[in-house]
Amino acid sequence: MQLTNYKITKERERMKILVLSSGGVDSTTCIGMAVNKYGHENVASLSAFYGQRHDKELDCAEKIAKYYNIKHIEMNLSQIFKNSNCSLLAQSSEEIPEGSYGEQIRNNKRVSTYVPFRNGLLLATAASVADSIFPDQEVAIYYGAHSDDYAGNAYADCSIEFTEAMNNAIMIGSYNKIHLEAPLLNCNKTEVVKIGLELNVPYELTWSCYKGGDSQCGICGTCIDRRQAFRNNGVEDPVKYKD
Image (cartoon, rainbow, N blue to C red; front, top):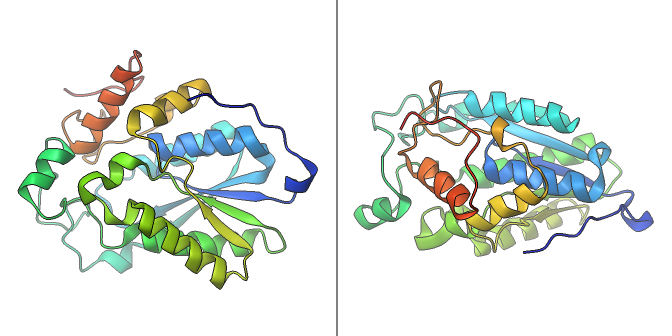
């Protein structure tokens, strides 16, 4: 996959980008793509605390925003999920599962790390924030879902159908001022990392692990996918792992 070094054209000068940032590989790649295409002055990022077990990803999202010199906003949405027992949440009685997503899907109807309609909530929140901070401009919300996320219906709120439906709702609700873009939707994790490496994305600042701690565990589903993506690109992942 070959990338082009984009220049900001006059017809796109008014376009602003709000990137949903988790502090991980995919959303940080989206930030790199947005800054490369539109310039850092036209890009902002949005992160959310939703009651997850740790705040490592939020710390990373803030560091990444500083690296790219973009505006960063953090929201607290934790009360919405206070009744959920999703294993990603601090109040959950379930442990973070180990093993690949493929193994988890074979044993369950859906993975235990699926937070109920989280991405729908985040995208709706992003639409509200985008309309507030860029009141008179066209805005694209960058969303880092990729094909491995919805493979086997692991995360239904990362699917093509879901993304298209959310885009339609956001367009209608914003008077066609705000739209959703998922530039990685047809890429797998290996291709996502390849794009980021070409753009010199600072993957050393990112966090993917569900478990928290000083180092990434290396054995939860997201760690396994991340490590393999870097291996497939013939480079060493710049973050530390316990395993």
